[in-house]
Image 1 (spheres, rainbow, N blue to C red):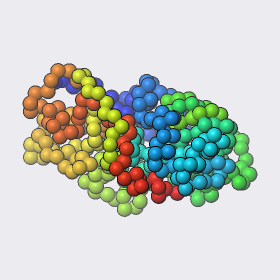
Image 2 (image 1 turned 180 degrees about the vertical axis):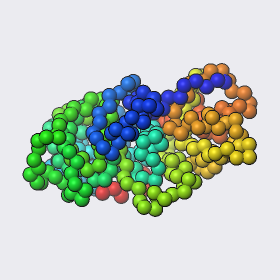
Image 3 (image 1 turned 90 degrees about the vertical axis):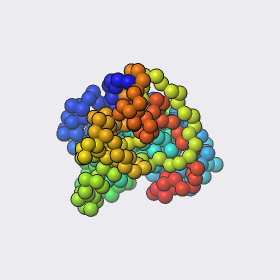
Image 4 (image 1 turned 180 degrees about the horizontal axis):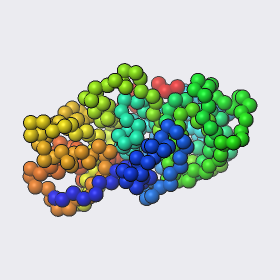
Length: 342
């Protein structure tokens, strides 16, 4: 079996490594940047609007916010009324039950944000009535990526405020002038917000969107050993449970099933770090294993020979001829991290 192109989850917005390096140098931590989609693969990252509502009704953690007031009860009986009134409903740490969203987080972590930073995800569900919901606020010392999945949102952005500024800016008079702008986020668009960026979001119709944030590293983490950094790169925060449906097999593509990091060559082989431990593989498998850091989909042709690198990675479950499931029904929904958020 021959391997061809490796399609990273970030290829939807970045045309290759050079574009990622440019973004990292010019925009990351520095400026607001809006990236349009280059293909339609983003549609398969998360469930649709109705399914997201069903997740909350079935026991996934969620919160309701309207006019800067939060309801953190997670009471599903309040969900329908809140959506009908145009309130914002969001599911925190939703990547724990959405493996494809976790895959995107791994790709961003690997090539943009780095390991050992606090990673958070939020799925926003709004049947918009023009209500400001959270009002003008900032998210503090975090880098954020917003992915619009359905509908559109209007977002007003201002220049970064000083570190330590109170998060809720809506209760104060904020002068809007130079440096302020308003953007419409179309489906598939990816918006980057640097730390301390004031923003206000209004939805005028049905909207589904994901927000991902990365916090600062602690002093201890900045001094981490190479082994600890490799372990941080393969963190896979998806809970155990039942897949909603397993995608059908493909004859021409293989999907990376878990994040991996290939260690240096030593003694005719190398260590492949995975979420479940370390595999010892021959040197011949390292070129292919190094391509899997962002959990790409790989185009293949033919059948793998018994002892080929592909066969070894297939045998260990690193690669498989089917995509990840869209959603996991958790064995213990009450243990999801979203219940502790806020």
